[in-house]
Length: 268
Image (cartoon, rainbow, N blue to C red; front, side):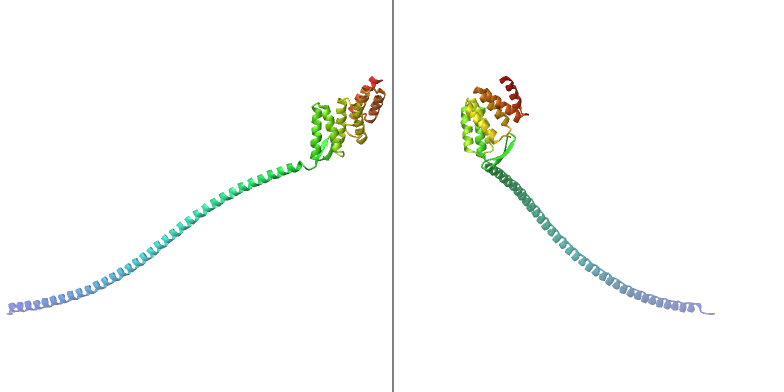
């Protein structure tokens, strides 16, 4: 009969050996696995370090780029501020120059105004010494300022009723300006001054001088009527009728002719 106890003992030892071998095998496998995991960990750590270094370098480059960008922005801001300051300075200069231009324009306008006033004043002063066109009794002629002044002065005396002074003034005017365009009118008023002073013969002489020198003068018909008036004052009715007839024939459309017809009726 087999010895199962021996068999069991042997089997137990065999299984123990197997178990021991398996344990050793398992321990070896575990050691190998641990060794493998350490290598992987080291590689992972190295990769992480490499990545960290790369990221660090990237971050440093980005930081450098950011610093450069900030420096550029700061420099740009300074440049903009400088440009703004220059622009403000230019605006101020433009405003100043504009103000100067406006002041210069005002000064120029004032100078031009003064020059114009001076020119007008000069023209007025020169006009006092230069011949000028005169219109009198419907006639135009050129007269010196002095003769215009003297004629108007004599006429003003006559209008005041100072006939002796007027007679002297007009006689002096005719003597002083023998070629004056005022002469026919001056003869007319001289004759009227003499008529007022009862110098009828002197008046007739000056009225006839007017008729002889300017028969077409607007005052000619009045002068002829005045001659007749002087003749009537001198009791020369025949001479007056002759003068009145001549007046009606020579100046038939004049107011003096109408007055002459009435007087002829009374004289006949």
